[in-house]
Image (cartoon, rainbow, N blue to C red; front, top):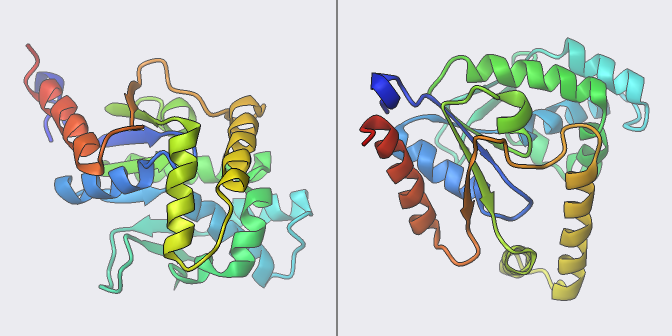
Length: 235
């Protein structure tokens, strides 16, 4: 897509709190534009998988950070039609589905908090972003990873709406959660994400904030596409 003064809107950053709908929006936007959809969380999952495979305790911050710094990791457009949104290649191996294991799920939050891991992954994320034609989603993309992104979106929604979405996702998977438990967990996650010292969750100063509380996915997508067109043909 062309941007202001004929420049490409080639790097798009989408940030926001948990369950704000940013991943769903990013997938649809990337598909519409023919861009790579890049959920940066997969990189922290890959580091976690590598640590587990090496028998390194995830609580050993220095050892896990060393693994992250040496890891050969890439995220590419999907090469297999098996429902994946991208390929995750770790040390030459396709680990796209392995990083979704329950053991990785249980340990990735701790791994992603380590400064050494975040530094290493941020460097790799920037390298992928520099290729262009990417919609990158996370919690610190516009502020830390791609501060010069062509377009920055911060997708927000009320905590109640986000908890309801997460509740419905769990129910659709056959689980029986309590809505109040999910709501309290969401509030706790928001407090941690927004007050942490390292890369706190906040909109970039030049991000466009979209409140997704009462928007459908298609409405949010249309709003972002309109933003791209407005930059393509400024008034």
